[in-house]
Amino acid sequence: MPIKKFYIKEAIKFGWEKMKSNFWILVTIIIVVWLVGSLPAWIEKATQAKTPALSFVFAIISVLLQFIISIGLIKISLKLCDSQKPKVSDLFSGYPLFLNYLIVSIVYGLIVMAGFILLIVPGIIWAIKYQFAQYLVIDKGYKPIEAIKKSGQITKDAKWSLLLLGLLSGLINVLGAIALVVGLFATVPTTMVAKAFVYRKLLEHPEAETEPQSTSPTPPVPII
Image (tube, rainbow, N blue to C red; front, side):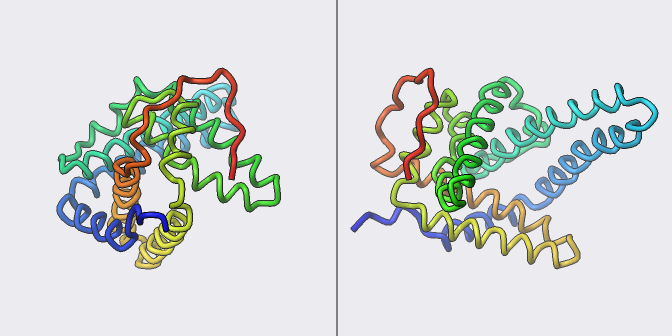
């Protein structure tokens, strides 16, 4: 019988406690994320009719900012797992990792898309299996293909637990949205940190101690 790698209740409780002890800085971070993400998108739409070239520029800016902020949010969640205090500036500190993060995100998206084309179920499995590839790029400096392989390794025998955690996290955030949307200020950081906590737990597991293989020039074929 495989050893239990993590407990869902423990992960959610950890995320909740970290959210409570860092509530106001996390609220500030969420507001900044919303403002930074919304402003370029708003300008893009406002200029689309009269100045399409300018609209296109802001569309590119919006996409770039979304990727940089995504890196920042993962870094913040990992800092909270390590009992470090996050800062708003952490949102924009991940730009040196942008290229590898972009590549691994594209590879991950293509793998999941291919899985959904293959009767949906493989897409769900591969989405779960390779979901921590981006964390490995940010946290450990892995190259994209190494990160995909490593994520597949650390999530071995944990897919059902990860699926349940994902469903529960989604439900928690739906409840946060129902609570006049304000509840999302509590639920989003809770689930974000809970996922980072699980990543750390999986990485600490004995099965995850092997070194990554050298990067292959061709992306690996996902195996269920």
